[in-house]
Amino acid sequence: GKCPIPSLAGLGQTRAMPSGKQLSKRSAKKGLTPAQAELAQALAAEEASDIDVQALEREAMKGLDRMSNEDRVALIEKMSKRVDILMGLPIEARAKHMVKLSHEERVQVVSAQILMSTLRQHMAA
Image (cartoon, rainbow, N blue to C red; front, side, top):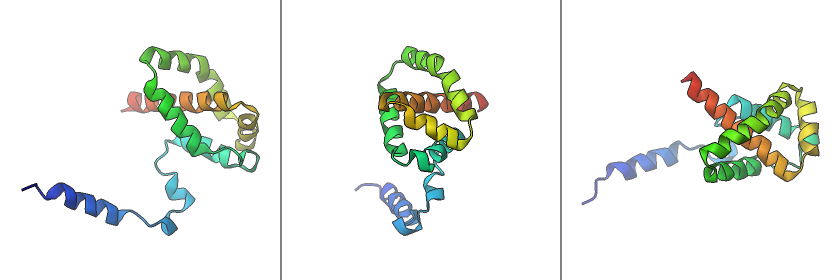
């Protein structure tokens, strides 16, 4: 017969998951890196309320998955200054800036940011 441990472990995980009601905005953002959380905060500001941050991040991740390492390096080289400047702005200014960007540019900014924060984590580790 099959070993019952994986299914038991799975049950434990589903039971430990908070129900939808308990998921506050704060715990939903726990999985983000500080940089992503900051971006999410900026995009959650009033000015940027029409931007779906999670959809942007999903799209960015999909794009990154398809990219070669050379393309990723090129993206960081192209976008790092822009992302750093953007992250240095106060939240409202950052939100206003993101609103002005085209969808493609937003995805690029988010992609570069995910890459940069991943790299920083690797370097720190």
